[in-house]
Amino acid sequence: MTTTNITSEELWNFPCDYSVKVFGKTCDELHATVRTIVERYTDEIHPDSITTKQSSKGGYVSITLKIIATSRAQLDSINQDLQDCKLVAYVL
Image (cartoon, rainbow, N blue to C red; front, side):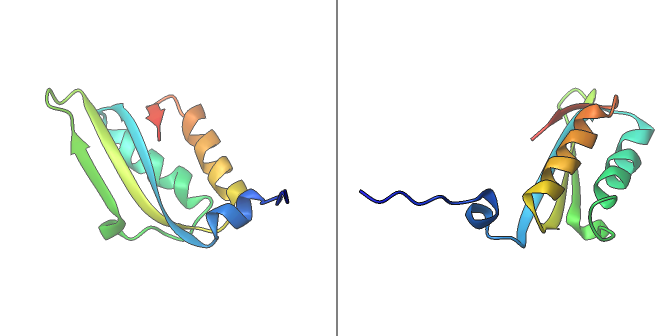
């Protein structure tokens, strides 16, 4: 039996399309803050690559940003910074 050591870089096949999805309480600052965090690690995100959806009661919002991911380290950095943001409740 032969085992193959596949790195996360090979598994993901970078660069690739990737969606960053964030949930947070509805507030004026959330959208701009999330975009700023993600753009620290990517090119400027075109507005057509960002979608938002309000919860049924309007208290929460989900924001999805479509990016070109270039490495696992980039995704890990984005994820960590978003998790550290007090405006963000969840990151998927």
